[in-house]
Length: 161
Image (cartoon, rainbow, N blue to C red):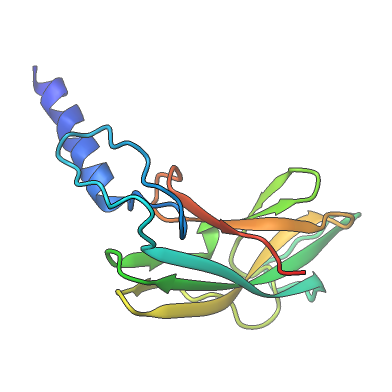
């Protein structure tokens, strides 16, 4: 009986901590936990844009490139339009290449400034670079950013032509 109560508590806390809107204009997925309050369909709580792309970027101090690899850096612009405070961490960034392969961003891969670890309150924006260690032939198709630590709620953006 106790384990069922803990599962319900964890479920409710997880859904309260992770925003349920994926991206601007995207409808709220159905809420599984009865204590979570769903956001109105189509409500934009957070936005994600691509600023610039460096392909290739100058490797940073943590990059350990193997033969045939390079660093691609993407400038992320993240806005908290009206959502709960949003924790920003470069390791939540993902680059998807034109072949459909995903690469997780990491600290220290790009030489220069990076997206800072911070909390965005409603009305605030963050701009910064995330580096991705990829095969030299990989090209950015789109980027994703996880809104919560569970990775199930994300927003995405594609480069503008």
